[in-house]
Amino acid sequence: MDFLSDTVTLSRIQFALTAIFHVIFPILTTGMGIYLVVIEGLWLKTRNPDYYLHARFWAKFYVLNFGVGVATGIPLEFQFGTNWAPFSDAVGNFFGSVLGFEASWAFMLEAAFLGIMLFGWERVNPAIHYLSTILVAVGANLSVVFILTANSWMVTPAGGDLVDGKFMVTDYFQALFNPSAATSITHMFFATFETSLFVIGGISAWYILNDLHAAFFAKTLKLVLAITLIVAPLQIYMGHVSAELVYRYQPAKLAAMEAQWETSPAGRPADWTLLALPNKKTEKNDWEIRVPGALGYILEFKKNLSEPVLGLKEWKPENRPQALGLIYYSFRIMIGIGFFLAAMTLLTAVQWLRGKLSDENIAKQRWLMRAWMFSAPLGYIAVETGWIVRCTGRQPWTLYNKIRTVDSASLVPASNVLTSLICFAAVYALLFVSYLYFGSRIVRKGPNFDLPIPGVNVNQPAIDTTPGEFVPDERPVEAQQ
Image 1 (cartoon, rainbow, N blue to C red):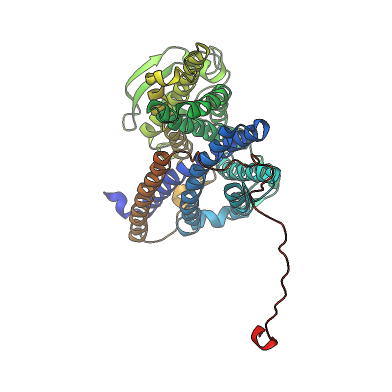
Image 2 (spheres, rainbow, N blue to C red):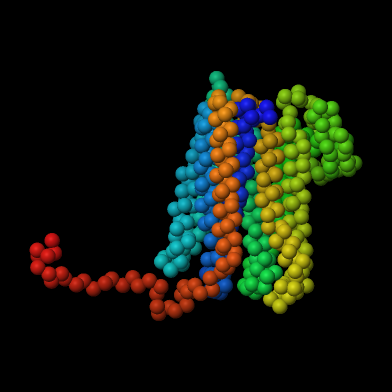
């Protein structure tokens, strides 16, 4: 229990708790925002009432996640000032401005048009409403851009250097477009979108499995399937590109991800461990399942390596990632889920081609609907484990190879951090229970089929905007005052 008196460890645990909990909610808003743009576009194009009702129904999940995401995101950013003040002071010239862009550009854009998207259906022109939905989605995804830009810069710092303990920016755009930014942003974009699609598909499968509006939700499931046929393979490819960046810029992390203690030289094949149990004390794996010559194919699509894959023994123990088992298995969980979701997409597409997803047959595919329900939370797990690999694998550095984590934490009593950690855990547990309660209420209530469809009765506008007739006040002047 020594960690209870270690400020740095407690600060890391608190940041991990708040980050892991917070990311649950923007995952769905960023991905579902795009889905709402698609579904409303289909409504405007076809005027099929089902698409309108879908847009109104799924928007409820959007606003629920938006609300909890805001409540949990603000404390997360405040920790850079409370728990990580030396780091913020050192890198604020760049890091602080990027987080400021996220709040002032992305969040404000999303929040400004959210009300119109939710309540403006019968109050504004359809084109204006659709523009609002698009801007909400753009704002949500801009958050991904700015946050991943800041985090990527921590992985591959560029555009300046440390001078007397402070990062001095010499090329702001080089810092923004650091070597890992574009790949990281794209990888996260597909991750949030794919996760949202499987959540939507999983909820739709629940309705179909319980024979509740099966034909209505079959439309959602088929639309989700059509999109995931594109997104799932692209996400796997972006995962591979991300691994190539780790191979090039973070060799110590790659060694931890593969539990590789010895260096594999260039020009020769390298074995890949499918499963292993790394042991820091003995500096070897207690047991492992090896696939001969597979690492070259995984990293470079060829047998022999172009560059060496360095082993963990190349670094002093204090310069290696420490949580080897966590990094190693988190990486494999993320990969396994990615391939499982792609396989689910392919299998469902085959059933669709066989005519098994027609309105008459889809409710009979009980095993397939259960599989979609099972898949609904897997995207969240993949994103969380991916972030664990990304951030834990960067250790012991906060700013890679420039600022160590131990030098980044605020010098506050460990008891203070422990108290705030307990408070965060209690409040977040309450928030999560509340989130599940209100989310389940939305599911149980289902779509509102009694909503008036805009434009159905063209002679009767939803809101009468005709100016009223002026009636003069005929009371005595004294009464009017």
